[in-house]
Length: 188
Image 1 (cartoon, rainbow, N blue to C red):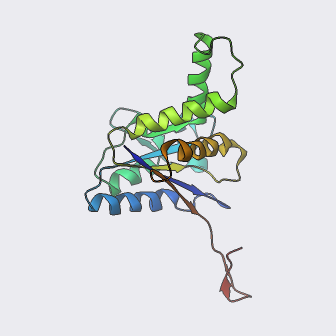
Image 2 (image 1 turned 180 degrees about the horizontal axis):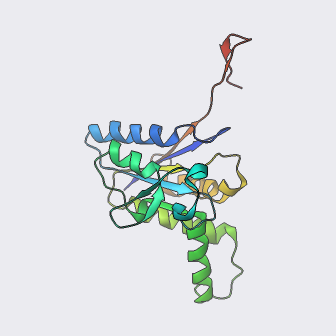
Image 3 (image 1 turned 30 degrees about the vertical axis):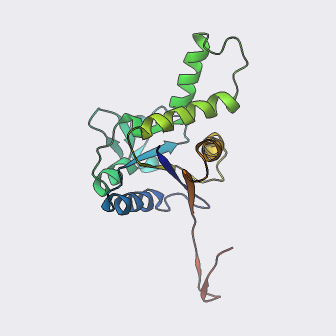
């Protein structure tokens, strides 16, 4: 059974969650553990291919041609696995999948909602991306304060219960600012 490590961040973006997650992956891999990494991006764009690199950063193109978040490039450089389309997905991709299912009648006339339909689709994408790995390190992009992140945060919360407490853990990174006037790092 795959174990999951969910990595989130708060207060500021570009905190270094991707590098921290990739570093953890490298440490686990050095111990003989088969690791994969996933990046969940809460923006509504289907992929970052048409987004401004000045706003979002560079696009990383995987071997299978997917235009993905630049963190996948960090993951490839830190661990021995090649990243693919299944290692990165966005809110736009999730909603697109759910809407197509609704149009095909797969929800049997039910009202399609964020919970359970969107969160279930997020969990299904995570599980597909984690197939074959001992440990899947799953980074949630943005910050926990972003309203766009809420379905992803709810999905990973649910996975903690569904997979069991020995199969899921959470790492939250935050900024510790140095306040010169106080001469100390502030933790709250």
